[in-house]
Every structure is written in C-alpha cells, then in structure tokens.
Amino acid sequence: MAGAIIENMSTKKLCIVGGILLVFQIIAFLVGGLIAPGPTTAVSYLSVKCVDARKNHHKTKWLMPWGPNQCDKIRDIEEAIPREIEANDIVFSVHIPLPSMEMSPWFQFMLFILQLDIAFKLNNQIRENAEVSMDVSLAYRDDAFAEWTEMAHERVPRKLKCTFTSPKTPEHEGRYYECDVLPFMEIGSVAHKFYLLNIRLPVNEKKKINVGIGEIKDIRLVGIHQNGGFTKVWFAMKTFLTPSIFIIMVWYWRRITMMSRPPVLLEKVIFALGISMTFINIPVEWFSIGFDWTWMLLFGDIRQGIFYAMLLSFWIIFCGEHMMDQHERNHIAGYWKQVGPIAVGSFCLFIFDMCERGVQLTNPFYSIWTTDVGTELAMAFIIVAGICLCLYFLFLCFMVFQVFRNISGKQSSLPAMSKVRRLHYEGLIFRFKFLMLITLACAAMTVIFFIVSQVTEGHWKWGGVTVQVNSAFFTGIYGMWNLYVFALMFLYAPSHKNYGEDQSNGDLGVHSGEELQLTTTITHVDGPTEIYKLTRKEAQE
Image 1 (cartoon, one colour):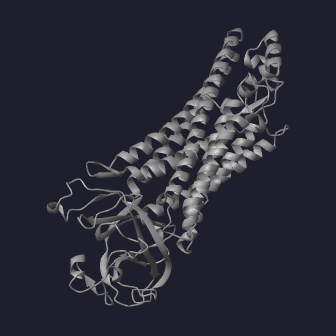
Image 2 (image 1 turned 30 degrees about the vertical axis):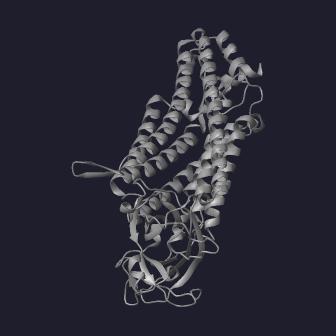
Image 3 (image 1 turned 90 degrees about the vertical axis):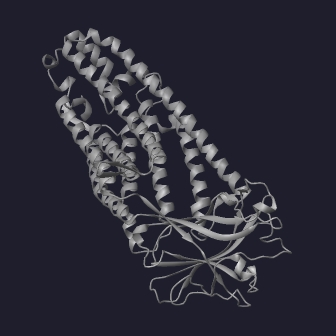
C-alpha cells in the first residue's frame, strides 16, 4: 500500500528537505531586505499658478510651469487682484516628474493624492458639505521638445473635510484649515517620460460651483510610484519561481495519473492550488515595459484573489478530508457551507475592485470613495467580505479542532500494535500535525509582517547595513507561499515505497492477528496518504 512521500520519507531526508526550503525562505527575505530598494517612492509636487487669459478656455492649451515655454505665472492669489485676473483664468500646473528627471516604465504605476491649502476668510468660509469641482487635463510626451498629447480630461468633484482649530475671528484670518488629503489619480502603467497636469477651479455662482470652498492658496500633490530597482528584483523572482512551480506541478500530476485509482478530491485541490500559484507567478509584467497596459493593476488583483481563494478552499478541504465523522467525502458539494463564504467574499471584493480600478481604466481620476453612494457601496462590499472571512475562520478553527481530536482518539489504538508498527503510525500522525502547524505559522507570518510593515518607517539600520523591511515583506511572503505550495505538491505526491502487502510482516514486526486488524482498518480505503485512509475508514464503517 503506497502512501505519500511525506509518510515514507525517512526523518533524515525530511529534515534535509525542510532545511533546504528554510534556506530558500531566508534568501527570499534577504533579497528584499538587502538587495531591493524600498517598494515605492513618494514625491511631493507644488503646483505653479499659471494665467490663461484666453476668452475660450475650451480650446486646449497646455500650460508649462517651467522650461523654455513656461506660462505667465503669479506667485500667490493676492497678486491676481491688482492684475484683474479672474479665478477662471488661473490654472494650477504640475509637471511630472520634477525638473531634470524622467519617468520610466519600471515604475509600473502612478498614484496621486491631493492636498489643498485653504486660508480662512470671514467673508469666504468653507460651508458644510462643501465640494470642490476641478477641471483636470492630463497630457504626456516622450521628448522634452515635443507637443503634448492629451491623455484624459475630466471634471473631478471632491468633498472637502476641513476643520479650523482657531477661533473664527478677524485676527485669525489667513490661517490655514486642516483638511484631509483627497484621492486624486491612479494610472496602472508609466509608459511615457513626461506628464503634465493642468487643474482649473471654474467658478459659477449661479450653479453654486466652487462657491463656499474657502480661499484656495495652493494645490499640492504627492505622487507615489514603484521603485525601478524593486521592480527588477520582483520580476527576477517571478521569472525564477515560475518554472520551479510549473515543473513540480507537472511532476506531481504525472505521479497521480500513474496510480491505478482515479485522483481523489484532495489531490485535485492540491493540483488546482499549484495551477493558481503558477498563474500568479507568470511574469506577464515584463510586457508592461514595452506596452502601455493600464489594466495590469486590475489583472494583478484578480490573480491574487484567485490564489488566496484557492488557498482558503484548500485548507477547508484538507481538514475536511481527514475528519472521520463525516460520510460525504471526496465530493466538492459536501463543502458548500464552508466554501460558500469564500466564494461570496471573493465576489464582493472583485465587484469592489471593478468599481474602483475597472472604472479607472477609462477615467484615472475616478474614486468610488468620493461620493456618499459610492462610499456606502464600497463599505457594504468590504463589510460583507469581512463577515464571510470571519465565518470562514470559524469553520476552519472548528474543523482543525475536530481533526486533531479525531487523530488523537485514533492514537488510543496504537499501544496494541507492535513497536515498529506503532512507531510508524506515530510518525505519520506527528508529521500530519506538524504540517498543520506549519500552515498556521505561514498564515501568522503573513499577518505579522504586514502589521510590521505598516507600523515601521520602512527600513531598519543595523550598524552600516540598511534592511528594507517593506521590500523584505513582499519578497519574503511571496517566496514563502511559493515554497509552501512547492512543499505540498512534493510531499503529498504518491510514493514508490510500499508498506503492508508489499513488504513482509517481519520487516514491520506485525503478528498475524494484528495484520488482520490493520488490513480491515486501513487498506480498504483508497486515498493519497495513510493518515487519510486511517481517518476515513471509521466514517465508512
């Protein structure tokens, strides 16, 4: 009776495999911590106030904040009054990147947040539920002397959330409100070298557009993009891991198909997990260096969602297939109560992502959080997904408890066996429990490193060595789940070694009466591992 490799491999060889995987895990963390720079860079931009005195503002004219064709500028809003410049003639211009620099496709994406500097005036205060309406134009070019090409032009509304901490008296005029930052723009690719933003604040008192928003002094932007050095390290990891997981996946399925029986549900789920890991590994991002694929962020979210949904489903099915008190095994329909919350939660997050990044494919200034309806809808999707996640973990914890209880109960029959046979099954049970603990440790490390990356400054300094914590989190956790899937497919592949019928009783130290007991208890149930068969037999009886 052949079991899985994890059950038939000697302890020495198993320790060697574990040591090799641990070395690769350490390397994955070190690659991000010592070789790669920080994952992202934030750059602050202060808009330049340009004057567009043309009567017809609808005709496109790109106003540059600096350079040979720079616009007619004013230093502050107060300067506009003596020059009789109207608010509709002022354009806030931002050039991306800063002077003497270029953007690169290696930056992968651009995310911008908006900060308004609003001064307090007694005769121009921010009213309740005030909304600023911006007319934003985005253009690009790849040569410093080429003409600008329009990329997007939208009316962008944003609700102001500002507080004034000082008393609203004449002596406090000119002080600034404390305003929340606002989401502004997200682009899923950086295919061009130069970008230009022209932001207008059109005023229409009849339609109440940009009325009661205070006196806006300046517009500040913070641009966030992925570091080119981190992108190269990330692509290199994907390129290395893709063939590794693909090869072990093909090898695993070939071992399964060589069996005389059809694959059971657990083996199919492990194979599906390998497919989802390969799907997330395929380095299609290489094409983003040469093509303007703005959908890469959305595609990346979908790939991650598929993998994590498959991983959560695997944990449920893995536990369920080792529970003795359930009769409906080896059928995916038997897990609808547990897998259902995963499907609902994944679908909610997918809809939320489509409502956000899906719309941004055509309108980079869109954000679902900018309207009351959009915010309520987004929160509803997130809350439903959170409830489903909580239900899932309740199911999972209950099933893990059941599995450990059932395995422990089965250990009571071990003293009646011969010493060799008893030690063999004690080893199997220990390895099964050890795998469950490794799974728990992987999930815990993911959560812990995520929290650490959020609360730290992004890097640690030990002497003369700087460790990029956030980069180590990304590469380490990504490598960890690849190694986890690799280990599952390797250790749970069918082994060529045999026990029971293919070996003499003398080799295992089994007496005739014990052999009959073990045969009727274990060998009549087909499955991938001996623990699997050991736990399932009681349910069939």
